[in-house]
Length: 136
Image (tube, rainbow, N blue to C red; front, side):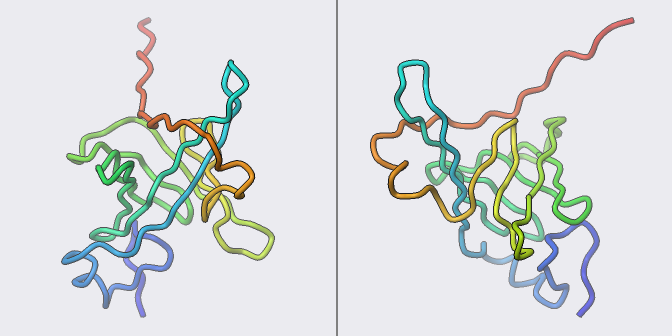
């Protein structure tokens, strides 16, 4: 099957109409950090295939869209399609499957956090940030 340029590596052109009509199953990615007070903070993202792109959802709300520009590398777009001037990528494990999602300086583990790290965490939403361009 032909692969459409700019789409997820597993995307098949013969399924484009299916992706356009209904989102695919959500894939969970989780990051943990130790807060200043010593508590574990947890961020959980759901990535959902939609119209040849991925939608990042947090608490059921669309946060950003991910547009593939090469294998495992994405441009981060705002939910309305506007430019956020951010990029992200997927990191593969030793077996060749996606093990991590790198976004905003954080690594999100595919499949959620180990049970020992889940308890008592707080959630902070990721926000795409654009730094000011230096003037000459």
